[in-house]
Length: 163
Image 1 (tube, rainbow, N blue to C red):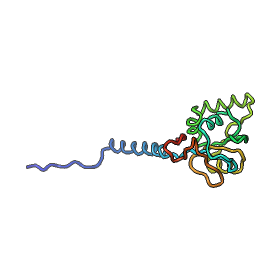
Image 2 (cartoon, rainbow, N blue to C red):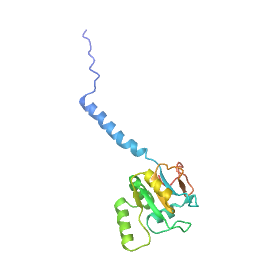
Image 3 (tube, rainbow, N blue to C red):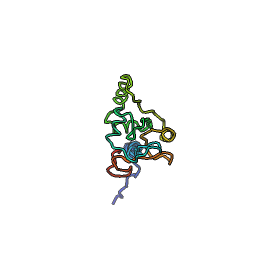
Image 4 (cartoon, helix red, strand yellow):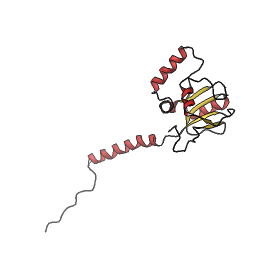
């Protein structure tokens, strides 16, 4: 009786390509799923601990020029979080947001667009030293700034609006 030969258990080149493609896809998807939480930070001198999503939207759309306590708002943003926060907070895409602010500035409105910073650390440092500063950043900042709740919800809350 002839013996059956078992084929080699090495994957074929096609299977190897599929595995590589799956690894590349996972490398692209996993960081997107593990994005840091968006947070609203303000200068420690700001008396409030919460901001409504409506007020946040109006601030970043240039409809409000001051914070709830009457202090002039100085908006800041972490550049790497811009596309995310713009979509979440204003409901606009990045290009529409940019053009929106160009129109506001050229119309002579007494508000200024958010100042961009390359990373959360620099944005946090700016907010810490600037009274009236408010920024949206990914992740956490040190104790030099105050992190606001949004609609009474904290960052880890399932109903936190800045997801």
